Image (cartoon, rainbow, N blue to C red; front, side):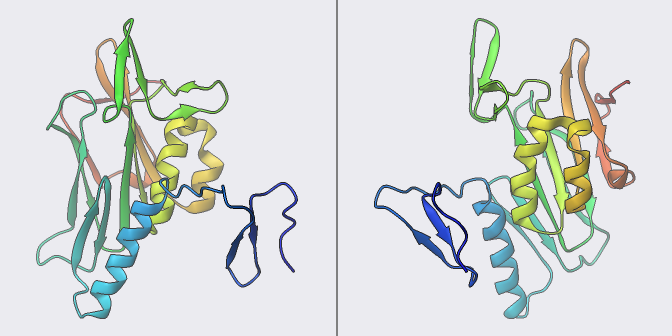
Length: 201
């Protein structure tokens, strides 16, 4: 049977189809579409006989198969220095890497940075971290969770990370520069720039 849709502008059917219940309904898939696109392109390349590939769709990266030498290497942009890497993730094939940050779409007013990632708890841009990079098996997961984890931070997002089995690194701006908080699964895979230290307790 269909999902109860009295308060919803769309009705989800058991078959996976969606019925729009009105002419003024807008579905915004911006939070997952780039990750989904990377996954779909990867499957197409697999089907065409090209299992070893790297795909980049905006800030989403999909690595698949193997390289002739070593692991795939994906740069993590420095959120406060344009064109500079904050670190490099060395990942095996079969992973997606997504980054969300406060440095692409923003303006500064009265010394405060206003950007596009809002904390729904207070209606203001989330300000504790300046970027988060998520490593996941599926692009839709890494794409969606990079925004969520940016807002939640490492402690509040633990159950979400455990459920979806993802790893992440947060970059935080301090008076003495950037520091990083990373999950255990990135140990040995993430090489940070020498100027970025691990955040203290």
